[in-house]
Image (cartoon, rainbow, N blue to C red; front, side, top):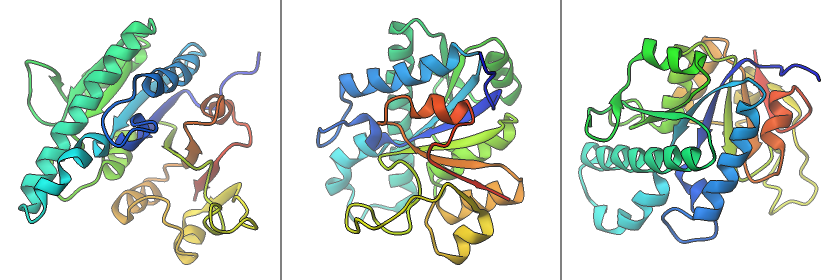
Length: 238
């Protein structure tokens, strides 16, 4: 069997990915499907870190947060990511995969604090490490947290899992002639104004020469194909 193209990956999951077709919250069937995709990669011997967003939970309280201080709202969003991280950890447990949650905010009763050396040790032991609470700082997105954690743990690539199977020349839902980019350079993505990630995260990946792949987490087998080095999603690199 061909060996995986990447030994260690950082997977960025949006909170919205956990909603399925629901308006907000966590859809059990959806989270189980996502976990099954990740578990298949883990069984290949790939070390997996996960950064999870919190939009699926924060969306339910967003109307009440209108006009709220930005830092306060961001801390609420960070707590939402911890809730999602715990749900993911439990889903991995039910799938027979050992997982650990590390939080950038100190909540020791439910999750251990983020410690880089311990996270790397867990990865080397074959455990999935789920990073909650973003970077622990307001004004930074979970995209930036994914880029940061990917660099810190020495990942070979950051995978941004979305609802679209890559970066397109136009919105494929609106323009049927839109085509998928197989590969892009960071400079090409910037010059074409392709919003692959938020600017801070994108700059960090570029400056640290961290490859980035955009793929659909809802396309069966897509994660495995990317890990095996096949043509799936859009690869962005220097």
